[in-house]
Length: 340
Ligand code: MRU
Image (cartoon, rainbow, N blue to C red; front, side, top):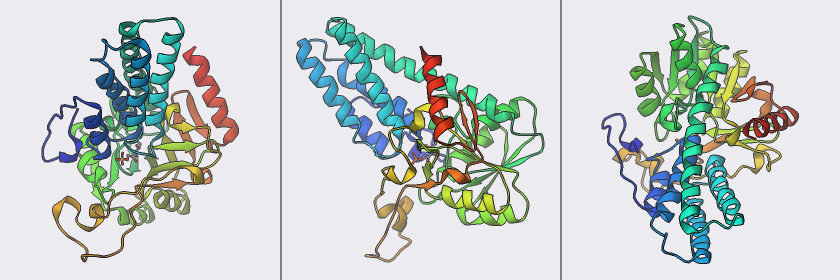
């Protein structure tokens, strides 16, 4: 995988060979972004089972479940992690029911992980095509955090409509919020968009309101880590503020996320578990102390934007205008039908 913590100064590959190494890579944000975390977890299961072909069947099944349990501890918020692990568990259960032996069970898990990877690529492309219809030539967009190719197995979520719009010959400009404290916007989004030859202007998070007030933003596109059944959207800390500013300036606020990011078991966003990150990330980020020793800190990694602030949710089955429980459950049902 790309070691994302070193970007953009260094572009290095990280070899992940064991389950604890995968848990660590996800926790450290070496691999990050909700869909990418899901794909990484699925491949993490393979790391845990690929050499266990010699186990007796019952022991193998117990071991595979323990591997999934271990991977589930990596980070709590992005539901794609648990969604991908559930798909791996479901595949195991399905193959077990057919009486498959251990090598066949391992083969099934390989197939499932690759299917998750491939479907994420296709899903990103589809969301890009749907979202690009909302972008017109000459528009200036704003995004927060990184929801591009490095956050998925494909071309990204929030950045996918931008990539497709650019492919279609539309000239667009993007404001990238730097995204304190870990700077995914500065380090990754700005870098990705520059690689794709899309005009990008880096701003600090606190400048977003100002550029909107100055009339420089036509629409906001962000990704999500978990969406509750009622359409409340959890995304990188700072997204809620961006959504409030967009509403105050009558700017459309779009969320781009695959159905795998929707958690229908949670009725609203207040139930979404929010990861808290270590104090050092805000007191001495990137190795330089910027706050007094011993200061109290609070560092939630994500916030929740209420559904009422979301103009539209772009999924692989279409655009949901002003998403609510009904349209979200309907989209999930259409996704199920498409999958069968
Ligand atoms: O902490 P991170 O970098 O994993 O947070 C990522 C985000 O918040 C993204 O916006 C979200 O996962 C959508 S990604 C396609």
